[in-house]
Length: 256
Image (cartoon, rainbow, N blue to C red; front, side, top):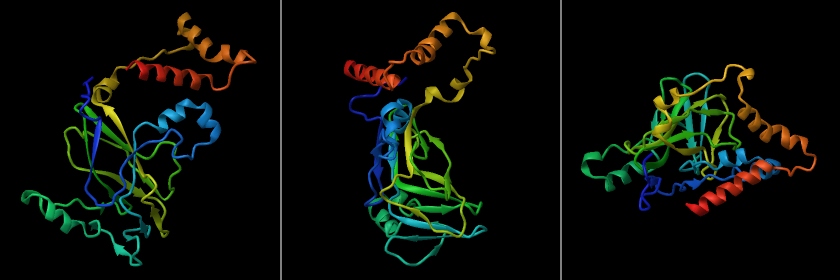
């Protein structure tokens, strides 16, 4: 696995759209929405929630789909609705051309773009990302965070160490004839680092124990330590897995 230089962050985000809220490290409490019991005792949920960075919409806006062919959109401090084909972020195209070198002028990325599938569209975060060599970004909905039921986000992996372009997501609208709101202060994406060594052909290498009768004595001993021994102890501490995992993580971080 590629070594990361101390001078090279795992990921660097580049803000293109002025005013877009910067990405933030994802939170173990799922931005405070995780039930207290889960936050205290379910280390698996806590760890998954914190893997990666939250990405926010670059502004608050609304979409509305008629259930057939047309999508319209409306943005903050604006009462008008606009038919959506490909939409630039307000006032950005001109700003882009004043900053960009001549060979890329006129190519400002669209903020929103519709697909041939009438319910599908692309949404740009306003950022470009670059990862350390060998690392990609998995783009997905925020883990364990309450999300809108009015749209679905497609997940994708971008090799951002090689591809320096807009950090965007593809959506599919699912609820017609109602405004679908995007809040600039509520994350709509979570991007997670993935090393190329753990996807692709590497995933073809897996094993299978066909029957429970084929478990080894070592397998049964591990199962006993994990399941039956703690359950048989009436005085076992609650959240033992969480406590042990947090201690191990602290020790590993202290020795790194």
